[in-house]
Length: 303
Image 1 (cartoon, rainbow, N blue to C red):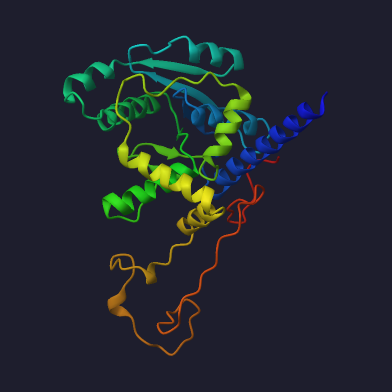
Image 2 (image 1 turned 135 degrees about the vertical axis):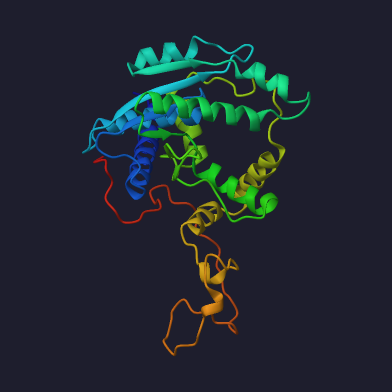
């Protein structure tokens, strides 16, 4: 084995261990997967969902609890969709799967005016179909491939355009009240996922088959974050930690904190405001590959 090959193998193994550790930690921190669960991995053909499926299959082999995995793809009948790609790949890794065929493309094109983005209606239709499948087939958890960068982008979209401090939660009850949705890649970086998908040579299906315009606002936010990551190493990690360290008493939401009932009770409080002190901040530390957010709980997976 050449030195170059040896180095590439070392770097891939390091990356794979990091992703498995991050996913295992997210599962443990948010109790995403329990004994006896049937986990439906929504497979789009993109790098994120391929990576999610691959990592979950690997973790299941050594997990202290038993859970089943089924991969589900929704073929929305977009022109040019390569129908053979996903079945061929899934057959090769011997995982239970199902391809649901629903012509939502025609519905969207009929309803949405020409030139307008179709993503909102398309996603609502897709969500309803997948939720229905989960109910009919005894699925207990629906796993999506959103990662840490998606969560931060959504936070900034809500901040800049929606007037809310809101992000993608790592675990939630679906809007129909019948399904638990999980995001096991919540601690994982998009650039790591992209490297992993390239190294594994997943057969990526392009996401622009429908011809829909990319969400311009999300594109702007993504570019902003990428610029920050280059200019200020460690800032993205600091921002993600902020989503895990919310201080309601230092915001302005009266529903979240009872400002009206505040009284000076004479008891010292470390979190009390120091109104006359000048706040001091320091530049974030550069990202450490082997440091991930953790609640301190044990992983469900022994790596």
